Length: 123
Length: 107
Image 1: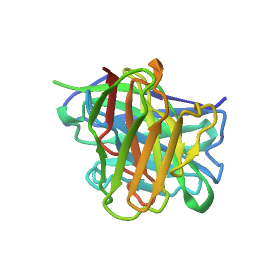
Image 2: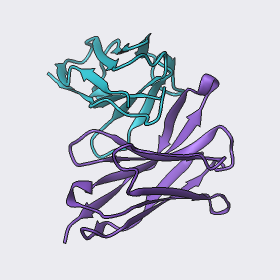
Image 3: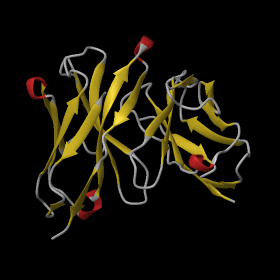
C-alpha cells in the first residue's frame, strides 16, 4: 500500500522559513517512474502546484514561488523536504505531498496524495 | 505557463443526473490532462489520467474525453457520494497547473 504523510509546524510567523517533510512508504524514491510533488490549497480556494522532485534529482518549481522554494530528498529515509522562505499570511494553506507517476510518453499524474497538513501564518 | 479554465464553476444536480464538466487549456496539451475529485476536508483523489484513462477502483460512471485544448469529465448517473469539487490538471509542461475547480452540489 502506497502512503504519504506530511509533517511540519502548524503555525509559523511572518518572515519565517517553513520546512515540511513528506514521508513515503510503499514505493521507493529511487524508482525512475516516480517522484513526489508538493501542492497547496488555501482555505476555500483551488489547488496550487508548488514543486516536484524525481529519482534522478530533477527538480522543478512554481514559476511565481521558485525564488522562495527548495525541494530535496533523502532516499534512504524515504523523505522529501520542502522549504519555503519568507512566509506571509497569504501562504496559509493545507500543504499536500503526492506521488507523481510518469507513464508512457511522459504523461504524469498525482496519485495518491497525503492527508495534508494545515499551516497557518500568523504573528 | 499554460492556463487552465473550467466551466461551470459550480452546478446543482440531482441524483441520477448526467453531469458534464468542461476544462480548457490555453494551448494544446494533447491528452496530457488529469481529473481529480475532492470532498470537503479530504485530499484530492485521482479519477482520470491521460484524458480518458479511468484510474483503478474508480466507478465506470466517470469518463473523460478530449484532446488538444478542450476536455470533458462526464458522470453518467450522479450518485450521492459524487457531490464534491472536481479539478482538471495538465501534465504537458511544467508547471503542471490545475484548473480553478467545479463544485457539484445537490439541487
